[in-house]
Amino acid sequence: MTTTSNGQDDQFTTLMQHYLDGTLAGDDLQDFEAQLRQNADLRRQFYETCRDTSLIVEIVREELEEQLEPVPFSEASPTQWSHSTPRMLTLGLAAIILLCLCLFGVQFIRPLGRLTLVKDVVWTRLSPAATLGTALRKGKTYALDRGIIRIEMDGGTIVTVAGPARFAAVNPMQLRLDYGRLGAQMGKATRPLTVRTSHINVVDIGTAFGIQAERNGPSTVTVFEGSVEVHSARQEPLLLEEGDAARATGSGQVALTAFDVQPFVDLWPLTKGIDQLSHLIEFIPPGPRRVVEEYRHNEKLFLLPECMNVSFSGTLRLDLTPETRDLSLMDRTPRPLQNKRVSSYSVFFNGQEPKTWEQPRRLEGQITFSKPILGVIYRDEHLLVSEEVLGLQDVQYPERQGRGLGPSTPKHPGDSVTLAPDGRTIRFDLHIGPIMDQFRVIVAAE
Amino acid sequence: MLSKTDVAQILIKERRQLSSYILAVTRDVQSCDDLYQDVCLKALNTAEVFADADGLLRWSRVCARYTAIDALRKRQRGSVPLSNDILEVLAAEWPTHRQEECSRRIDALTRCLRQLSPYNRKLIELRYRQGLSGVEVAQHTKRKVKTVYQALTRIHKNLRNCVLQRLGGECPL
Image 1 (cartoon, rainbow over the protein chains, first blue to last red):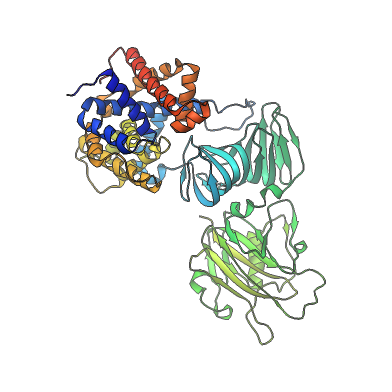
Image 2 (image 1 turned 45 degrees about the vertical axis):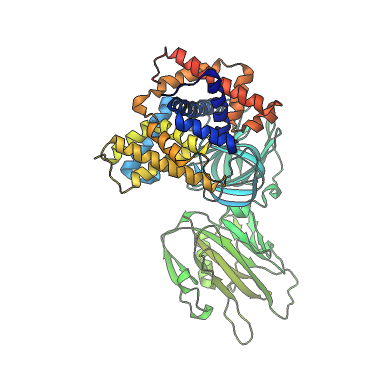
């Protein structure tokens, strides 16, 4: 067995540090390899350094987790997962997870969430560069200089984050937002999401909210649907409902502020499951009571996300499905859809007054959803029925009939909707008259 | 023959050893846990039957090596710098959980970390908690890169000696 002197030992150790830093190359790398190849003691030393490095990372990460309780909560705080688990309990939990994996399959080794969209993102130097499909792991901090990502949390909540931003997944039901803009659309009702900023914890009771946290500055939470609880160090939890907004400062004070959708305009389509929109479609963000008739434009359509991730009983009639996508409007027989978990989107045109058009206007475009399209409803009678099942209760829908799309006639060029082969994109070619035209897209929720 | 439960139990016990081997290949502390889980999933889903723990450990080291190499290539860092023959030798010699008791070592290491000077502790935080490279640590602390590497080398050496002392020289080496 070859032994080493102290000088050689220090030289090898320095080479090793460079290697573990990824900066060893050329002759130095060859020298390092040669020493490893020839000397079992040095190979042992290399192992010990790798082992100790892993242990140091584990120890400092756990210390970081223990430091993630900057805001003392009142006794009335909601039950939260404890993230400051002792080391042996962490190992025990890992053991339980793997044993469950053996018994019940791979679904039990689950990430805290997964990236389902990465749009124009530039990650900071210090951040892991996550790509589409990347799993979020506990304890990792991500930071983006710009762009937007969408995360599907393990609990089903959809979260979008717009850069510049820095965040981490603490557990499947909790995110830490150091700074940036975040939109959240709650998934399955039994697993509410908590978002922590430097000043407040926001607990989502249901269903959609946005947070804007400034770097070394205040945090603002805006509730679009449902309600949230805002917890801070200095006061009792504050319940915010749809249409409310609150601002928290470093002093721990939380005060109501003006409701403003503007900071989240770019986030909401993605949060609501829409990956891409033609420019002539205007997205209606979530918010307090809306009247469909009030949305009017002569050159644009409107897209209104309706019920998200809901189960319905009974039967819906779909006028267009992936199976009938190659048929014309006239040839399609409605297909039933029963007992599914779905999300619904209403797309409509409503011209501005005065409506004195002589010729129909042609509007073409497409929408790409994040999940597969189950079908499209465009016949009058089916639109009305589906509105009762999947429409939003706080939205006032038009009462008149005759909103649906129609095939071509001698006097009218007709409308066309088709589903792209990707299963998630709908293309439309509409010849719009002065009355409202509408179709509804039903998308799979899972 | 090992059951799936046996496989899981053995891999759990070998978590730190496998993760540190993966670190030796990728040199990326952020991804070791992920890649370890990938190896576990492959071990539990493989059609291969493991006769005993040694067979499983040999298989898992090979799997860890290739999983780590794949990850390295996907990150476009170029080819794996350590030659395959060295990685194979390291895998064969890498101690197992049975040969080394980690829990006492962790407790000792935790205490030794607390004894570091504030400056050395800061270097550890920057390097291993924030994941900065040596160059980035040097920029952050406004020191020369060579100085930072030398400091990290000294820190590792001192930590190793401190742990040995605490364990009363009992840690099998």
